[in-house]
Image 1: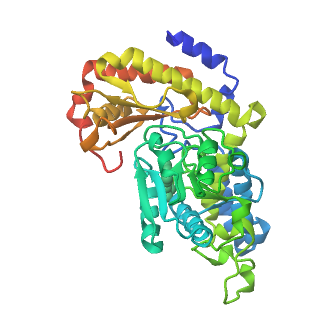
Image 2: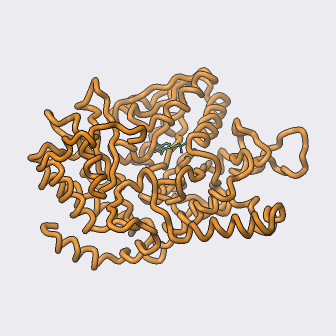
Image 3: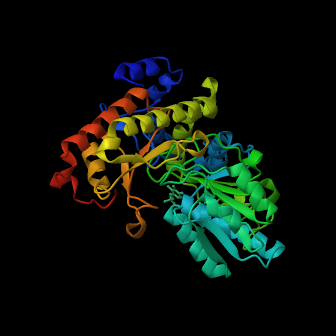
Length: 432
Ligand SMILES: *Cc1c(COP(=O)(O)O)cnc(C)c1O
């Protein structure tokens, strides 16, 4: 891609270009943050309105049966299952990603305590999303396990040993965009006698996932990123059928009971993954999530996740190559892997000395120009290993090559002009 016309030509030839019409994107905005909060689908407002005015407003309590609210967790779960290589009935929508991680990690620890009680380590990455580490920390305190953090993929093989209970990874790292090899790591963890918990927050709807093919044990994921479910959308949880009936999950609420409307005083878990639903499903939010999931499923006749992945890799490669070609002399370097198999659907950039602290202001200046990315602070003690990053997500459903071109043009202008130095771009807001 040497010129803007090249970018326009690639968009014109893109078989997925029509999918963008599904979204209500603000005019003129280049939205490269679908990995934080997906875009509003055009169907969502009307669907939510219908749920509120018709199902809730007119049908009231009857809607649990007439609109089948009771099975929303499975209905929307079955749709997500198609995107992550799970079978119908294996995946439910419920609660938040953090809560679902709590449930599956606790269940995994129960299995280990029964089958291999000498194993006491949970291994994860230091750069994993903090909530995952915090939840693991709490479970370690409760169950007498230890959380061991590795600094990158090279240290993982040595951690797969006789002490390992659970390997807990986010398939696509939220900072670097590094994509782990789920199948190989799961096989290696199993060979070492351990279980795996995979967080698909940056995978579901972004990259093809094959949970059954990878023989994973547990997985969870997020509804409001690439699934376009809306802020705080419910999350999902998948459990391999070989584990689903073995243990209670720790949040044994009535909606995961085998017969909630018998109102028995004792808990009897529903068979399969339904027991991972705790309380009453969030009906309005789950209905909005369904609209978002449908925008991804709309790609199925066009090649589905495989076609989306192909476009995503072309977008991220084009962005990384352009950013390097045009902005390297202004201090920019690419942090995300250039090897396609190791890259999710995002590209992270960082700035070299003496500009290594400028990332936040550069992102603010880009946002003021309508190019929406985000900033993630690094580790001040080890900026070489964990730099401050400028993070850009590329959702192939609604991002095209012209936006890639224009985003790099803006980045070039922000750096070349020194515009980012303005005071208004250097004030930190609560959410970056
Ligand atoms: C976004 C994200 C979450 C979000 O968790 P919430 O409970 O929805 O706040 C969790 N884990 C990872 C890896 C994420 O990227």
